[in-house]
Every structure is written in structure tokens, then in C-alpha cells.
Amino acid sequence: MRRTNIDVITIKGGRTTLPGRSSLFELSPISTWEEDFSGIKQRLDELKSNGVRDLRKYFKTHPSEVIALAREVRIVDVNDATLLLYEARSKAELRRGLHLVFNKDSYDIFREELIALAEGKSEFSGEGTTKTLKGRELQMLLTLSVSPEAKESLSRVLISIVDITGLKESQIELRESEEKYRTIVESMPLPILLIDAETGIVLESNRRTEWLLGLSPGEIVGMHFMQLFPGKQAERCKKLLDVGSEDETPVSERTVVCRKSGEKVPVTLHAKAVGLQGRACVLAVLQEEDRKGSRASETDISAGPGWKDLSLSNDLDKLSRREKDVIRLVASGLTNREIAGRLFLSAKTVGSHRARIMEKLGVHKAADIVRFAVHHGLID
Image (tube, rainbow, N blue to C red):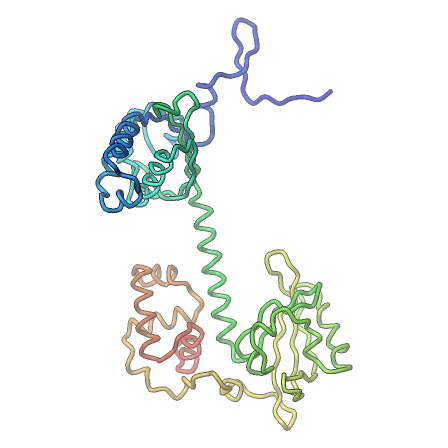
């Protein structure tokens, strides 16, 4: 027999009944507000009768109108989840008005709510920020719904707030992590390829690889790994796609790669298994060998076209002590936010330092800052 799960039931006089609207409202794990927008409805109608047709333009030139309209909202009720989310001791605290939980961004999304309602829409959703009664900022997903019986008066509007602060912070951390990874890869003086272990398709390459092969990023990414090698060399290198688990040491193979011009270049190929977002990949490093068959040194490799020779630069004397501190931390792979925490600065100030550093060094990428730090011994 199939069973239907009912989360909440009430027992009255021995009878089992489904929970009422008020019970669902109170027990909802999502912050829910019941608000009365009837005062707003009247004001929107007034603006329309006064000839205001473009509300977005009107609110842009009259921002105080949005603030005034927010004060017209009467908060009828909030549920327990709202008290918890907004760090309120009682419902009475929140009933005092939206201005207590609004910041500048909150008024922006409220303005969009007003425009949607003026256009006759009964639903609206958007992302923005709000603040708790203790001043803590929250990233939110807001959903507005007008009750069917209140479409004309807007006397009953339900607002739900989902806290997405953790999600947004995770997205920021992911972007910063990707930026850190890209900075490290681009700063390497050796050609590097990231390859899908299952398909053999090249997923990423760095600038040095582009110079070695004479190919553009668009030509390298998407090609098959074995296309890099001529004839039998391709079959010999095919085994490197099966390099085992991430715990195993890298494997190496002396081979040759083909430049776009057809020239064959002797290299030692080092390959290691890595995991990327659940995908099995191979990180391949191509170490070019000189004419005598020995491996080229890092100094030789670093001197390729498109690389500014920072090792001979006298720009070190132009840098302040704080700028040198920032360079050390950038070269260590830290993000602006992490550097700000280390140096007790704001992330914006760190960004300004980085911009001045790049201007003084005549470079445009974080990878060049890393190379400068390495050449001048600013990091171990």
C-alpha cells in the first residue's frame, strides 16, 4: 500500500486534520513575510494619474520616492524562520518597518518590485542583499507573490527570503581559486597542458605551450593530445593518458612534438594524474631539450617571445615596501581578499597596490608579477 507522508498534522477532539494556513506559515523553514502594500497601491495609482509612465526613469530621478514607499509597507506578520534569519528577538521588532533590514542594494530590488506591481504583475523574484537587525549582511533570493483576493488592493503580499550568502561566498571562492590556479599555470616557464584522461582532448594550455607549438589557444584547446606528436611517437605517448591515480609519481617520456610549421622539437614529457571537478585528467609538462639533447634550463626557457625579461629589470628600487609585500603574497598564490587579511588592508586597497605595481613594472598580468618575484628573490 502506498503511503502519503504528511509533515504536520493536528489532533482536535480525536480527529486528524491537515494544518491550516497559519500553521504552514509559522512552520515554514523559509523566512516568510506577510505585508500590506495598499498604501503603495494608492501612491502608484496617483503617479499614473499624474502622467508618470516610465517608473524606472522616474525612480532614478526621484530616489527618495523609493525610500518613502518602503515606509508605506505595513508588515502584518513574519514567521519564526524570519526571526532567526534576521536575528530578531520578537515579531514586534521587525514590524517597525523595512528600513531596519534594508541597505542600498535592498532599495534597488524593492524598486524593481514596485515596477513589477505597477505593470500589473502578481509575482516577482530577484537577488539582492539585506541586513539583520545586528547589521550582518545577507545575500538573498527574494520572491514576491500577491494573494489572488488582493490583486486590486495589494493588501496581502507574501514575501519569501532564502539566504544564499553561503552559495555566493562559495562562488566567489571558486572564482578566486580558478584565478589563483590560472596565475600559477601562466607563470610557469614550461609548457603545460591539461588533458581529459578519458577522451584525450586538451582542456587548457598556458602561454608557454602556445609559443612552443606555434598555435593559438583556440587551436590547442579542443585538439586531441596525440595530434601533438608525429607518427609512431603518438602511439608511444598514448600510454601517458593512463598514468594511474593522483597518488602515483609522474611518468616521463622522451619524445618530439610538432610545431605548426612542421618543425619537430625534442622534449621530455612529464605526465601526472589529477582530478578536476570530479573529472579524471592528466597534467602534462613539456620540457624542451636543446640541440645537444640535454634539457633546457629555466633561464633558457623563460626567454621566449612574448615574455618580458624581468630578471634584468631595475624596477625593484621603484617599489615601496608595501608593494613588495603585496608582490610576495601575489606570488604565493593568494587572492586579493586573502592578501587583505594578511596585511590588514581592504581588498580594494590591495587591488590599487596591484594596479600600481603593474604600472611600475610595465606588465599586464599577475603571472608576470610572479616571475618578477621569483627572479628577484622576493619569494623562496
